[in-house]
Image (cartoon, rainbow, N blue to C red):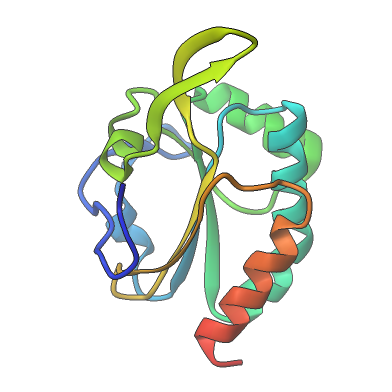
Length: 157
């Protein structure tokens, strides 16, 4: 797993909402709140996305950008964004290559079943691409507030 102080993978291609290939390098130059979530329009992921949506203006004013990433297809992302009025980009990592590079594509267990999935994780990345804070095993409820507080602390506001 990528640790605080390390540089995020900058050259792995994922798809943006126009289905263009993009890399995280394109988001450098300001703080980046990079949140990985398991699946569009599921209870926990919806709570997390809406929490971040509700703090988006405040986080943006501090000079940070929020970006969500899951393995869902772009079509699913667009429906999710529209349904909940999400103002930030959602990137599609269908291959899970980016999640694997972060070390958050891992074995999970639920109701006696073992499967591969996304570990709900958020990274705060500085303008040069270095991780300054990590939230692991994110509790979706209250996550927007804690991200806002940390961005405020890091951005010196």
